[in-house]
Image 1 (cartoon, rainbow, N blue to C red):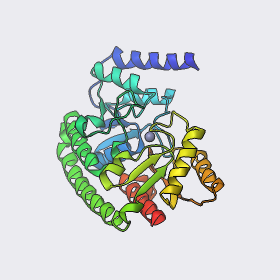
Image 2: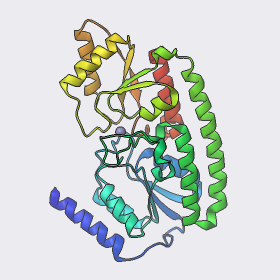
Image 3: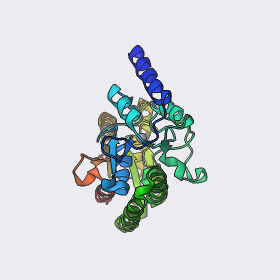
Image 4: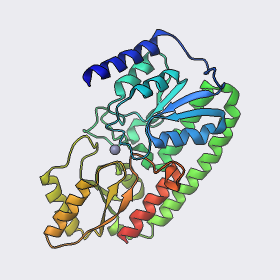
Length: 307
Ligand SMILES: [Zn+2]
């Protein structure tokens, strides 16, 4: 495996840095944009519309913390005019590739560049020292929308007015989303705003919308939850009369099921309130397959289960 990885990386570096290809791809005349997570893919599709070609590396249900580049990904990256990724070590196994791309002038842009570091939540779990789950603050996502729009305009000035128009419409939709989310959360009494999930993806969500967020697995799925964590958290659930805990679509169920079993062993009950989309959107074509649909679905699921 090591050897294959080495060959892929070498081939990628050779192709990326061997020649300069900053002109638009010739096959269809459209800007070729490659993205990592489904949230970023959805954002680029909203801003770019039909004017650009967007290729997402990760599908629904894929965990970005553990994702490794395949050979197919390498050729997609090589053919890209611009690459957008999350940054802050969200894509832990791809960091090296993107940083090298950036340094050598091949456009690889971390969307987290849009944000002021002072507004970010610190984290010892990531080499970046920041929590990378920035999409769970709609205001951040709006700032990222504006940043990405400007980068697209630079990469493809001919379509600047298209990007601008799409972006303005999308920013309005995000403003509406934020208001809807806040209204829904207001249905839930403040003392019931406790969100227990498999991993700590929801800290920005908690900060922004007033939830106490507790993740079983730490902030990255790369570290497993231990017996001690399960015991402590089950006690917390009982003490705080938490009605429901949540599974995540991109993290195996077993950690949350172990937590539920631990609560039961102490003669208490906690429901599994549903599956939340944390690090990946739902299936393509479904409502939850868009950022806005995912956000509304998560909030409805959380509020209804904790009420
Ligand atoms: Zn995560």
